[in-house]
Image (cartoon, rainbow, N blue to C red; front, top):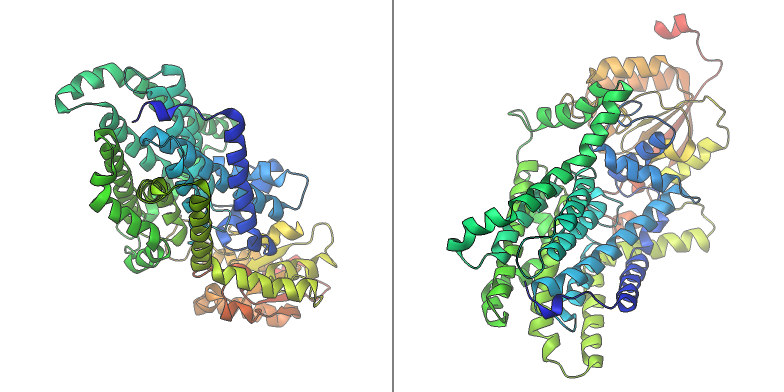
Length: 547
């Protein structure tokens, strides 16, 4: 770590920088405001958060497998006095902007960056590349990264330029990282990287390592213990409320079943595609390996480069463990990748230019080029959809979930139930209808990995029979991969019941722009077509339904 340039930024200047990053994030993420759902994950977070706000603990009324803290965060978001989807989008943009600001603040504690060239380039890289790989969604990684970076900053402040870390700041860093663990457990990977980085950045050599461990073990242990406090508090709430089994199912059983011998194969191809979306940052990080030694001013900066690459390697190992390699998992890489790209650009280019105008022009050009490269499709998509909505008068054009919710809301009565088949659980939230199943994610328990849903597993055929027997007034069927791949023993009873006791009320076609300029490259549930069925009243009595 460097010394003089690591001082606190002047408060007013830092505030303006933070507001600037937030404003940039909000503007670049405006296309996402048009859609109620980009990815089914964010739909479940908002739905679970809203249920928690109503008094239902996660994993009880509805199943999911993320930590309870994430749903607590979305409970706060759903309580804001505005449309819940818009609130979710704005909070996601603020989280991205604040994370970029934290990178700007962390950079001079790793490198000699008095003019904040490295930090500015790192923050801009983060905001721009958060537009790719599902980063336009309100994914857990956006909020997890914010907690992780704040924990890192506090730990760096506690460490200073050497000596024994300040106990109070280390405890605070632990609590912040513990909150991050309650957003998504993979913050533990960042914490491991920070532990290695602590000794790498503050220990002169291997001979001094034993003494350094003796000097720092207490603050480090305090950080680790503090990080467990949020999780222990959540566990205490479940134990005291009599829902301990629900916590175990949502936090232990679900993962044990998925990562056992019967789990999925490692999705190398999906991982490669996710890396391609971040290719400029990966190339920059690799270039730092080649020229970083010449750009670095001292041993401390060389060790900072090594720390950031160690962080990348550990996150990569985590991706292999997670196996799925979903695109949004790779958003965790943006923290170390952004700092390395910022170092290459700031030290290799910006510092060598005379005059602030030239530096600002280059940064502006790179931002424009980067946005075009990673977000051309969602921007063009949003232009066409906005035209159809605000010029053509087509309400909710391009958003089948909003269209379906609006149609249902026309005649929804208190107590009416809605059953959604497929990846549109956001419609439950938008309508406020009764939900006839705990398995709201797709409408059925996981067919491939029993227990993966986050609550006690039920055979899908049995659950479907129970749901249909409850005669929900509305059934919404997303015309996507989930419905298409339903096995015959599930699809046939569903189609038979729809044909016997329901009428097709409305169809919602996929907007053609989603073929030309898909908003999301890999997942876009709001773009799917859907069919809405309404029960033909009078509903059959209990005896007839049972038959």
